Amino acid sequence: MNNTILVPIDFSDHSFQTALLSLNMAGRLSKSVVFLYITNNLEIKIGEQIDRLQAQISSWITQGKAAEVPFSIEIRSGVPEEQIKQYIQHYEPWIVLMSTRGKARKIQDLIGSVTAEVLDGASVPVLAIPEQYSWSSLRGVKRISYATSFHSNEAKFIQLLADLLPKDSLESLTFIHYHKAGESSYTDDQQALSDAVSLIFPSVRMEFQYQVFKDGFEEDFSEFLATDPSDLVVIKNSHRNIIRRTLHSGLAKRLAFNAAKPILVL
Image (cartoon, rainbow, N blue to C red):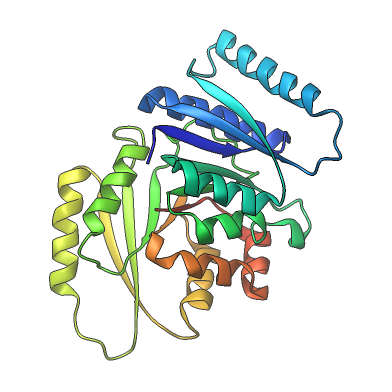
């Protein structure tokens, strides 16, 4: 894994907002940024778009809105999700920031297309941000909902989360564990995870919620997200295939249309 932040960009307003977030994240973490644009070979004004992005970045830096960090703009031709996944596989960026469609878009344009494919297939952390979230930093992430399986390496993922977030910004962390009816107690697992989190986030409030499977993880977790008050939902890489199945289901598309929120897959 290298020291870059990858930002697939389509030159929309929201992808520019994600670009701003990536620059400030890179400045805080001493990383560089790669903006990746996938063309269909039919566009003749790509040079103008690149000039517009570079001018916007210069303006942000001059106004003090963005950190001045190394960045590059790469152009590739092909199917967007395939090209993005190929780039990730070859270069292994530290994280990928993806802009996603929001409530004002048609249902078929939501997170369930390119972003879902990248979330499903990427081997590095991916943060998907709906367009109604105009983040210039992650300092606004105060409450996180985290789907846990109580795996033995859970502390490693919590540390990745701590590296990503600004110091002392997180206030509460809710762990959600889905299990089958009649399964044994998770008291020891919960205590072990609680102890590990306390070392990494000593001042964060922790809560554990246990949910019995009703319709399967995809439907149950989608139902949970519909009323979840958190600022960010975290799912581990062992659940990546859940993202794709969930977001391509009719239920999840309706959920995304009504209550889309940022999702981080570690």
